[in-house]
Length: 87
Length: 181
Image (spheres, rainbow over the protein chains, first blue to last red):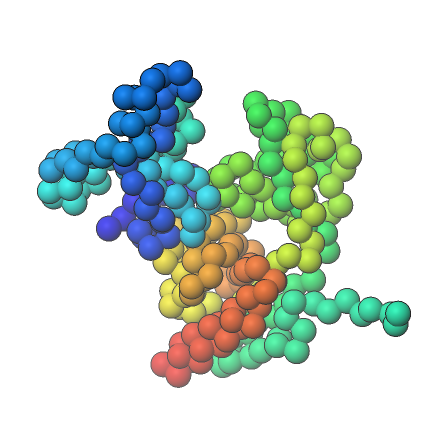
């Protein structure tokens, strides 16, 4: 599997650390209520298809990268710096 | 207390020659990590140009002026090597002295690319990685920095504590390449 880092270009996946669904970018506000926070902390999708993950380029430039990929085909559809994805 | 004698990271490990290749330690002088303050990328670049005569390098790039080099060192990070940073840089960036933190090894010789092909998961052939290119990547199992400083010369950098592992891995790879003739 190859992941295109927005800074470094296409790199081997061994340089990356996998965090999970790109949920941290949608952190609810402190007063969003228990339901929203319960969902944020505990509930996870397990999609058969396109998903968005956070990967950390720990063996490279140190950037967090949002990777869109397909869990059925293993195809990587696109990447974006987390700092930009959030902005 | 007796006088403490500074010891370089690769003291007693290098230099090393295998076939036509050699590895030697680089005494770089001061090393400072620069990170622009929020929204100050351009201002830090200008300050670097004014003080050191080199700009903030683009990703995977190196800027040099005389002995001083600015090596792109990752997300929002540049390593200024071979020059004490001017005070003016502090206005626009965060500066961290890392002079004793990195082991810097220079690899020279016609088989240098083949040696790195065994250690670094990045294409470092001249066509893909010309002089003045740099990459943050893995060197063996270590996170490090690879910079091409000449057509057959590279700088390899890892954390100082990993100097012995770097030299060991490098020596094994150099011997394997040399054995192929």
